[in-house]
Length: 232
Image (cartoon, rainbow, N blue to C red; front, side, top):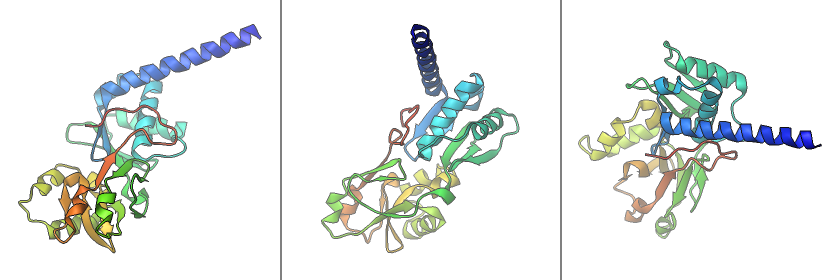
């Protein structure tokens, strides 16, 4: 029994060491952004052992597309090999789009096709497992019945129709890759886009109180949280 206990402690020590190593690696190679995506610096990522790469990648995926279970070993290994390869252009994995950005990093964002449908907005709602709603009560006083959902192409179209081309909103919007723009959370009412909190944009026809609604990207609310980096 004593030997068994020692083996158990040895296993737990090794597991903890790997976790700490992976967390340290993530701090060096992984960055989360308040627009709801992550960037993985491929060259630095490739310098770590394969097991650490898989742990970092798995946690990034779970933060962007929260799920009860992490992607399987084979799927993670294939994605890891592709991401660190010289011919990598992009792929999908477990509800995420992974593709190269202009700086040769791997950008990880929500796959629009797998995002949840619009949901009735409520105070402190955690939508898509990663967006926390706050300050909604300030807007409900005006009687607004809103839903939260991704912009999609329809939302982007409405946003452009309802805003001037020289609006600062566009500078912030156009700084994002198209696949990220599509998955930004918007506030909807009967099919009409009313607000996009990330862009600090509110429809001119909406009550002023609606601009107080906040939607924050969080990385620590997944059912099985793993490595979590700070959001910039």
